[in-house]
Length: 266
Image (cartoon, rainbow, N blue to C red; front, side, top):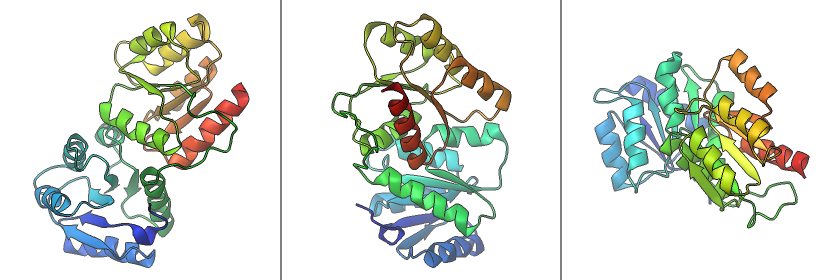
């Protein structure tokens, strides 16, 4: 259990000694003092295996690999798959940032970041790491059936941990909207989570299918997406989603959206 920032063991990956010091000082100001450093992806992975941290903080570009490469390696490693990950980057291109979002980062911090930015990212990290947070809505969690639709296995794994932390265990996965529609056709669900950008049937088409063709047309649907095109998101809202969360998301925001969706449906 991580009750506060001070309980976090953090690995800061940064090839620049100056930048590493900036991050360490910012963490120390918030009471995070159990901090190790590494200057490359390989040394970071080795350090994580020697002493697994709660959180790894990394830039996008390292001497031997990218932040994406390191995060995907962590997510594929059973020992490191549950380590929270924060990216610090001045990168603004969506095509570069999207793989980080899809791989289950806890947060993306701008460079330079403010203390408020870091506080928000660390709070999201605590929410991700801590189990059994209570939903502020009367619902039988043991019976709550959730359908999780996303073409990224890492994104599904990240989302499942957040849902598990809320006490939601009965979760069925689907790789895209077409698979999700097939599952919905044969099984009853209380809540649906879907990504936007997916092959075969994207999130918009999936939401429209639910609202217009499914026998479960009133099931609450929450979209968790890295999509930033406002016109596309407005089209999703018009199609009938119950809520939208950004990737990477703050677990507390997902909690509020779930509470609102379940309260409205009940």
